[in-house]
Figure 1 (cartoon, rainbow, N blue to C red):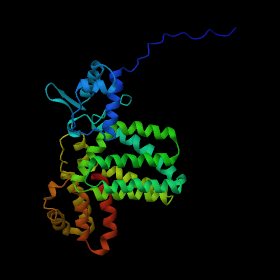
Figure 2: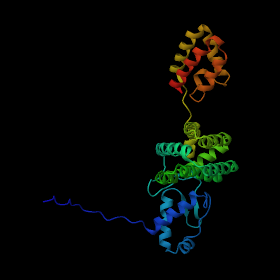
Figure 3: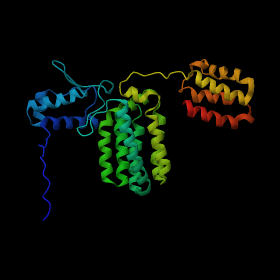
Figure 4: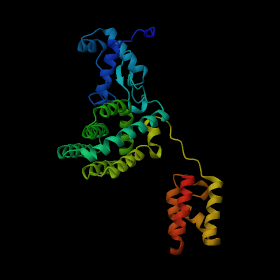
Length: 326
């Protein structure tokens, strides 16, 4: 006699309301650029007519998006899509919102793992037609210089084209899900990079990704992607995109200076007492004001003042210092 089937109580399945469907659709319009930060939505009555539903359902959708920080709805003013620096970067009814730096890094880490897979597969399997399509998307990015909204749309389309060339529809769907909460964050990052004059470097890394794929060199292509990811998070870019105040780097302080002085004195003797402040003065700083942001340039200044016979040993020492304090 077979064992009786296990019994359990099934919870009632929660269905999406009309308001949630409308909120999701409005979010899609924002993510693909048909709605933009600063736009004012039609009135609730007009939206209800457009969606063929009740004003109550539209009111629910606006409430959902307002609670997530995407919309600012005020009586007499209308419903405005907030600039990215004032809103929670995005909502997604499955993955949730990107609210802080830890969540942003979690999404970016997941994106990195998925895109390593798609880039490597595209490098091995993309057809000549898909190569041409990737170059077309790349040229759209180039033409979007100075236009953050156009750039982010071209950027997302390029990465989706890479995923399509990889030939795995499941990973493609996962990347779409990851990009939805990230889209506004990436938009804010792109804006920040463009205002800082860093668009050419960002575009160059995308060129390296695509050319690595076309050369069927997955290692070079994934390395370029990692470099691109570093560009979008270094120097306080991520914090500013999340609307957080920039936190200055603290000085490296006495532990670094003592370590530096001991190693440099062992290498060149008493001249270390002269070179340490001189290399800092080239940056317009006192040694005790050096931070990890200054470290690569500072160590490079020291290297230029050392005799040729000491360069190899200094390269090893400065590498250790940068690893320890950078």
